[in-house]
Image 1: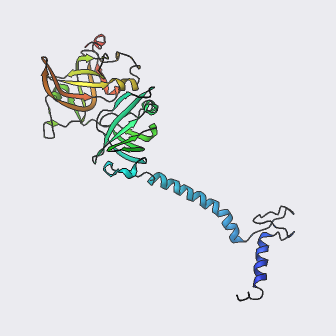
Image 2: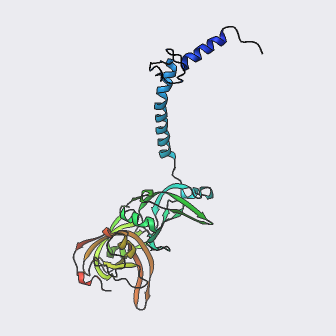
Image 3: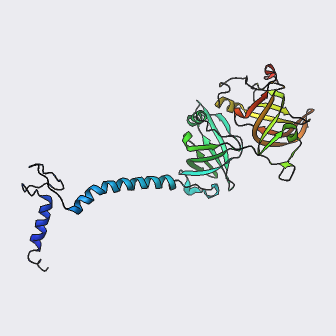
Length: 318
């Protein structure tokens, strides 16, 4: 190996020691600018000082940029049809419309209700669940959706065989936007319509506002009965059913858990306006009674709004 040119080694050594040794007492101070021995200032090179003081600021800016990038693109929204086994146990973000009334049932562990509903984003449907520890907090935050509501969800995906579902653990993981009513109809006018997409028809699951007079009330909880049921008649002869689940009444505080009567149900003869999703069942006659036709599934207690009073004492009679 060729020897180093004369003077180079001394030059390098002198510059390195100038940087790390105190020029006043000659002791080693490393990167410090204030000598710990003689307490005198030791100015470093300009480039070293720039790197020393600017690098923390650059690090803070870089961390802020990474945080913003993570919030913006950390969980990009996916179409339900794009969800596959590769996403199992991952957090996914998706949005869509609640395609049927959510159901609530007693948790196997006890102590609360399990919530289940499906979301349709027009590319597919996906089941959403929230267990007892989350359902109560969602109800308190007003984040339990109704049929037809638009929701955006960021939650954990679970795939077992052909079953796909997401689990909500916090009200912060779901955003609910109430759907606007597509039409305002008289109850008797709705009863005369047929389901379909042609003019003069109305589609199933449409969100509508309907007004009419209460002609029938079933507001007592019976074995096997999961909803309060009303029947409204408008200005004509036809009538339309209105249904709101007992679980919804409990979650929104309209009745206490275990109550067998909804005291706040509108009475016979009351004029009310209701908003909800339409459900249709082919009419038929059973035991001399006509059953079927349109039913409005109400998702929130406030969607049954009184227009004028009736007979509250009859609200709990079938």
